[in-house]
Length: 467
Image (cartoon, rainbow, N blue to C red):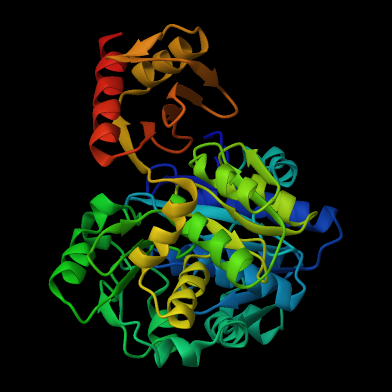
């Protein structure tokens, strides 16, 4: 049987290749066994907009119920944060989301959520992983409807609970009555229903159900969001853009000119708003690939800043133990105080829309405030699609210290918290890290301008592929 391993954020695989009913049953049974071994009695379960999500959720629900667990099952697609919030509100032991997040449409996946409403910590994931048997368990003969009649599966409206939670936390009326005119790109993902409920006047893009995502991986990065950028650039009455990934836990934003506001800028805006404007404090936790401008802003505001390995689960673990103001990663997964310890693309978007509404300033004007504090910077990332042999050879070269420069850029120092960050100057660096879920090598760079970032990325790619 296929050995099933959980990556940075859950198990993901290609549908009908290794993401099959048989393998899902193995993972679901291992999850149920772990929950029962820990004394848990209930699980919250949902799926996003991916192909066969309902079928896979039905199968997992029946496995859980057959094992004696109470299952709170969402009907229709939901976002990952909705499931995480549901775990807390229902006081369940664990949550499971059938999703492959931002991966290409051929993938599906399986995320684990703990009782605190965030990603399960690595030790818990290992406990489940170690219980995955080689044998395929039998499919329960009891139908979902029969389990419902027995009270073992109960339908839950996670979307309604989430909307009510947002209305309590934000001044939604102020946002809707302000100068803010939002364009929203759901990327055919699970955030679409919630955003149109909270902001009825929103201009929608890709807010319908399409499990193929029109062939595009639903990752909210600039190269995937050309329509949203162009719409803002050519439509003066629109002055903010929001995009979420397939399960709506990641965020991308655009200013009134159609310029991308990336996760580094969003993190800085959040710290600025929550601390400087709202008077809140706490630790700031970011992953290794995030701009070092976050450290600089934290120093200015006398806030503690901690850097973790890549993966939101490391941030979530800290959030369960300490007061964290903002936690986030380069890939658009960001969390903030006052919510569950979970990245949530809609929630973070609402914070920034409220920031605009309360100050009367556009995102570009608010970013100008940030640049006055920490200086200008640019960031970009290339995903090099390589065969695994070459990908891992480059990683070995990095470990061995084989690179002294990339083109004209000489390496001054190296950090290897998770991947390899090569500092080229005080204000410029490039980082190399293999994807944990795809045959991809990610190359990140920061410099003062977009032009130099591009030069660094191109020089690095040439050096990697030469060697």
